Length: 204
Ligand code: ATP
Ligand code: MG
Image (cartoon, rainbow, N blue to C red):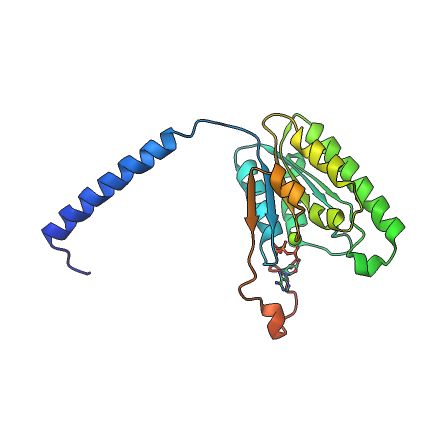
C-alpha cells in the first residue's frame, strides 16, 4: 500500500471538509421536486439503454413504468423479455413497423406513429404510472409523422409528478426547449464502423 504521511492526510481532510460544506450548501439550495421531461438524443449509442436504466430504478422502488416503442417493431429485444419478468409493473407497447427505409410506405408509417402516440397519451394519463418512456419518438417527429406542436404541448401539460423520457437522434429544437434534462450522446467511437455487426445483449 502507498504510504501517506500525517501532513498529507491532514491537508486532504481539510480540503475535503471544505468541499463537503460547499456540496451540502449546494444540495440544500435545491428544493424543487417535479416530474421531468427528459430527452436522450445525439448520434452516439446509449439513448434507449439509458432510458431503460431509469425504468429499472423506478421499478426498484415498486413503481410502474410505461414504454412505447415508436420504431422498433420487427426486432426482438432482450429488454422487452427482461421487463416482462416484472409483470404489470411494466406496461409495454411496441408499435413501430420498423425503420422507415424498411417499410417504404409513408401511410403505414404515419398510421403506426399515430397509434403509438395514442398509446403514449393513454399511459401518460394513467395515475398509477410514474415513468413513461417514448422510445424513438424523435424519429417519428423528424419525419413529420406526428404534429410537433401537438406532441410538445401534450408533453408539457403532462400530469404533475410524471417523468417522461423521449429518445432518438435529432431531437427537434422545440422539444429540447420544453425539456428539463437533455443529454446528447456523442459518437466518439462505434464498433459498427469497424465492421462489427449488431450483437445480442449489446444492440438488441
Ligand atoms: P441503444 O439502444 O444501444 O441505447 P441508441 O438508442 O443510442 O442505442 P439508436 O439511435 O436507437 O441508438 O440506434 C439503434 C442501434 O444503432 C443501436 O443498437 C446502436 O448500437 C446502433 N448505433 C448507435 N449509435 C451508432 C453509431 N454512431 N454508429 C452505428 N451504429 C450505432
Ligand atoms: Mg434507440
